[in-house]
Image (tube, rainbow, N blue to C red; front, side, top):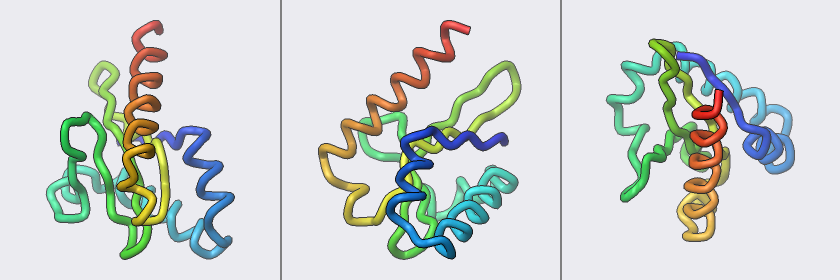
Length: 111
């Protein structure tokens, strides 16, 4: 699977985490993309209720919010957000994830 980190998620990583944690996040996301089929079956990945959005537990305190998109036969993991565990579950954040996912799908349907 290919990995695409959306601009808002990249800004969150740069703003909210120190340099060492940023490197760990990128490494874990790369591992996730390379081993998607096996990782998706673990307890570290859960679908958010009533949504097409998933969360991936990078560590005890960090969550990546993502969607998957298939273009022809190529799969893309689209990282919408990387945030602390407490922030990932706020209702305002959930709406933001849905909006980001919808914007991504709209932009790729026009191609």
